[in-house]
Image 1 (cartoon, rainbow, N blue to C red):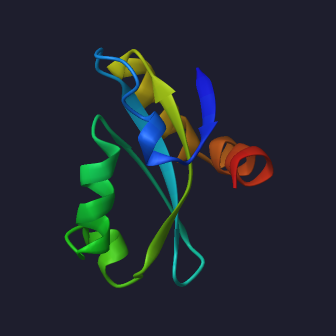
Image 2 (image 1 turned 180 degrees about the horizontal axis):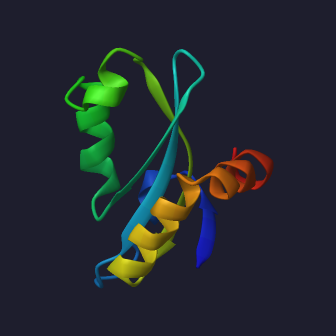
Image 3 (image 1 turned 90 degrees about the vertical axis):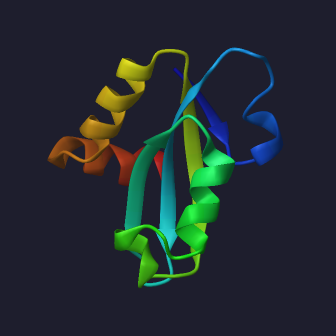
Length: 95
């Protein structure tokens, strides 16, 4: 697992597919955690109001993202961040 600060230019540095777990901060201060293989496209969908959770909380700001080479590890990490202990970890270490 490699933690990186949010710069969209660094997401696809090589040709292999990467999976990205990302954290957004919404206009109302709530956080949104998601997973995607195309962060630029997914952020565009969030900011156009096409994602139900964030559509009423615009604008959203990308706080951080973590890249994975393995899809299942990425989705498991996303699931962890949405758990009680994962939310505590996220608030202390990632947000």
